[in-house]
Image 1 (tube, helix red, strand yellow):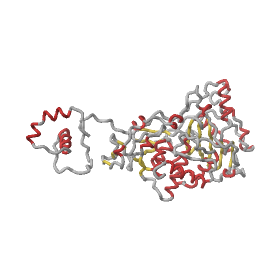
Image 2: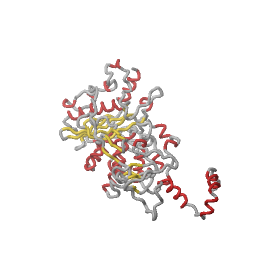
Image 3: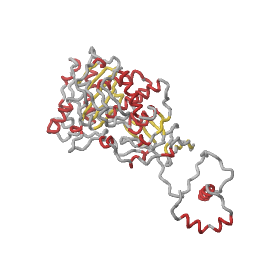
Image 4: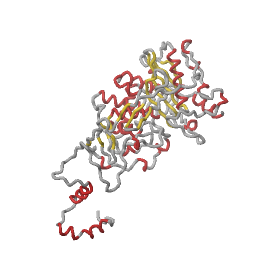
Length: 475
């Protein structure tokens, strides 16, 4: 009970904001300009920069992005691609909006930022200044912990308005309930989608120092609202708070004279560290997709289903008689509707999946050329020692999902590959090597060495066989 009171006091001081998307008028604001650690809602800024580049003709949605060793080594949540593998920009955006994959976000940053995420961060900061985002400072495209990377509820509302008004043709990217890569289905962490009527975007985020954050949109009777909620101790409490704010916002006439870009600056200069409240040493660290309430044992609070939300008062809204819906009255959002997964793929062609050697195999048996630099693949990211960001970050998934996207199992040494119907070979052989695949393999090895005379080869057979069993001594 003591923890619930402490957590409730902390959460009551966290940012919240509701804005009319069309007019920019503020319906509710609480600490809206205070600096805060954004976590994965950072990826909305990453998508904005990418769509801006598309709009300016610098890149296309079907442009291929290549995974680097650095991008592949990012901590979870991640997709688990290997260095050299590719994905279109459009599919990459879908993956980071749904799966919140840090490796894919890093890949976008490197490919669009001139090869470095530092270059992409400069683009993010320049775009923030053009949008009038005063509290935002960006250092990476994923939202992984960095105490220099901060934003505010106001800035994220400005960014959300820019995304929905400037790129209406891409609005569907923010409301995808699930994506499917190979046989793996990944569902959106946004608990409002498919559960709150009218919810149609955008992005959630979580790190221990920032808590559970969300930038959400919802449309009712042709009116669209933007809500930003930050610093909550669980995804469920965050979603319930956002739903309550939407309820009150839609009940408001919305005639406030104050607009989101005119909110006064905060007296705070640095984002507070929520780690002691969210991920204290004696508490299990939550996950981004955690639907378990962190204070469920506090039944004595009178609201066992939603103990922290009960600490809020509807009077804080300041919406007038038309908008006095009590916050904290909602106990649950109900079951989530089943989404039809949107297909995504590796490479340029739909249906392509990665095989074991890193090449892409087309869905119709057509072999796709391996991308440049793939032969220099690094070791799997799992073998890399975790850095400070990896230690600080509490992931939404314990491990990458690469094993579930159609990766072929390694073949035993010397195993014969089955012939593929319709496969296109790079250079047809002048003469068939025979019907025995093992003979073909031996023939291929023989072609790589100087040919010996038949008599010498026959005489040296036993000696050669013995030599093969010894480790090589020359390189």
